[in-house]
Image 1 (cartoon, rainbow, N blue to C red):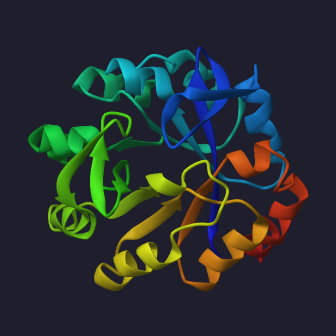
Image 2: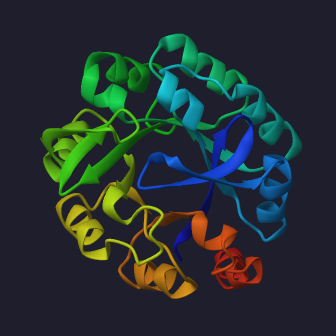
Length: 244
């Protein structure tokens, strides 16, 4: 059964969503991220994906107090990303309650530092963020596309010890038009040992069913539930099944 991972994206401590990483498209969904997280927890969700969008833009962790509150007031396993550029940022994230951190741009720009985090904390704590536009890795909050091809990039880190990857198809992010199932299938075919979390494009519960049937281990979604296209009760078919 696919693992459901709701996303909470943070700007100014509020729960927001962007479309294709465009900060000008910001839409605020809640002033209280904790209330949102607790609603997910009440539905049997066990993991939460938290992105510090202020941090991604500024290159340093910003919304760590919100992270701390979410970790203290829920039992959710939080994976945290956005703005993790320095050792101290990662330390703060873990001190504030993150159980895992995701590094994307840092894995491209400073691979030695990213590997040092992997060696220090272990592959159960460090997730590779592999965000792609037209099959190539994008960095800096998706503002720049590199010449690195997606699957070889992930494979290079697999050989260095990475076992968990979050992959976002940027062209689908926030569009609610369905996930890049074929792309995730290619990654799974090339690297079946990777725990792959698909992200981007989820517009309805059937999209999650499609990924589950394709054997994708986990899925991140956000806008679809905030826009009411997926209801909290829809999630119970997955969370209840995972308990059995």
